[in-house]
Amino acid sequence: MQLSNLGFKFSVDDFGIGHSSISYLRAFPMNSIKIDKPIVQNIINSKEDMALYSAIIALGKVLKLSVIAEGVETEEIADILKSLTCPYAQGYLYAKPMPL
Image 1 (cartoon, rainbow, N blue to C red):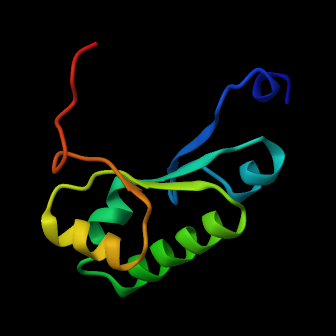
Image 2: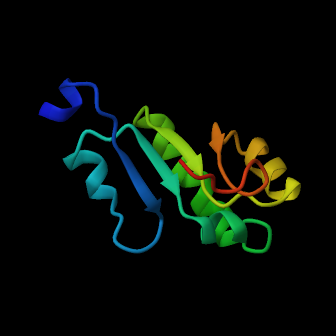
Image 3: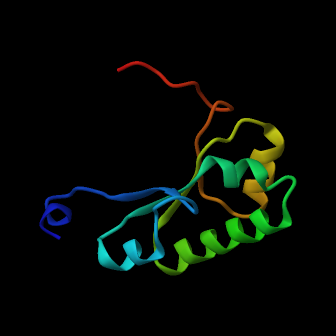
């Protein structure tokens, strides 16, 4: 809490797989959720991943967290994300990793 009082912002990275947990959203002062790349890339072929993605967006909205989609590499995925009202996206479609 002291760091957030100083203006630091926190994000749960790779949300949806691995060690990220919904409990982090309550235990720590989070500002955003970054949805993991494999989930984002599977929304085209998997109804389950589409449902999971939609649920994460809804959760973010209810908790007033920014939701960021990682790994957006095609216009098709970007269009689906827009239709699901995903507010932010990052990936090779927009820019490749850049040096400092």
